[in-house]
Length: 508
Figure 1 (cartoon, rainbow, N blue to C red):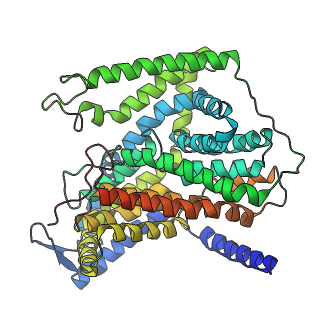
Figure 2 (cartoon, rainbow, N blue to C red):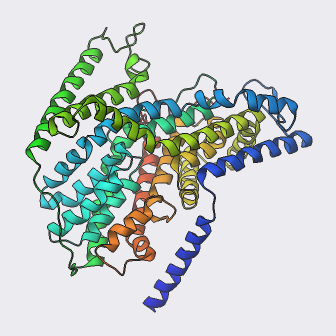
Figure 3 (cartoon, rainbow, N blue to C red):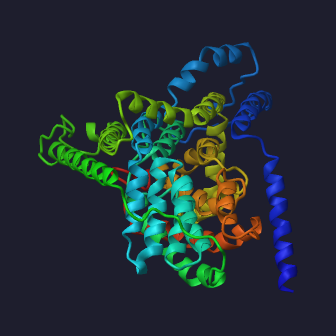
């Protein structure tokens, strides 16, 4: 009976995987969507679709792009669409600095030290936490932390698959959480800003819009994943009886130690400098007019500060550890980070065209107005609506792996819709983060799923897709329930999600 159930679940998973693999590449998806928007704009214009703007009372009609005027606008603004697209610039700037820190070995060595120094009873917690924090360096968590977690667990006399599962849960399931603001926050904030300006042309969603929430989420994910590992995963796997042995470097070299000390000193100097610019009432990094911090050079230049800090610490580590011999090595590390971002740049070019086409046609605004009216009539409050949106995001994540691609599609509809109901874009974005991250670890369409599969096969030849799904499903369910509850309590208590971030807006 048990084997029959397992075979049935594996067949279902294989069907989902096969169906998902028929979906186009995210870039092609945006190309198709561009043509779809143009076609729908013609149909909507022909049918006379419209809505009454709740703010100014004006009638909003569909603008047809399938004509000479539309073609002129598409061609004339193709470059500016991309150059002014909010998610592009901040992310590339951040990755220049983080690329130096990653290529120098600073991030990997710091994470390795963090896990190596963990007391045995806190081993799982530290592995998960290190996995969550690794998302600041894009793919370091997948390439470095996950295989290292298997080796660490094996060296500690525990099943290596439990270590890989726990770290995978932290890296991918906790992808939207962190203690630091990173490129992903800039991406989401930029896309959310573009969507929010359909309703309010002056609205800005900053990279720190969800900062308080993601800090608490980091601790929550680490605790929940630790509990799931100890309560379900380790007992399920039992004792490891394979022949594979751990080969972890358990001691840092003298060069690595010297590099870490130097990077720490540089980081400390940077922190002191930032505090010197923020603590005094007339500090250099405060708003020169109001003296505040929320709308200050510090907040507007946060991405630049992150990039510069990562670069200086990475250069220091690289020089002292011997990884960087000359300035050419530093330049090459930035070039390598841009090579990694090539896929993102291509994706964002077509995403920028789609978002702008969608805005020009007024389709997003009309959908938002009509959708908001329908939701208002449902009588549901903000919390039930956000929980419903979270579950919608979890479902969408099973079929579209790219977090930025999904948000670029969903934000222009859902952010204006909820804004018209009085829910701030920052709240909608936080709900998206919860829904998107929770199911990352159970979809074969996640780009690094095959890599994790390969890491597990090293320790057990019998591992299949169904094995990974079975191991990761408890994490996914636990994340979804606990994270959703956290956001619900956050909204009910009225706690800001980040510096200067609103929860609710005045309903027009």
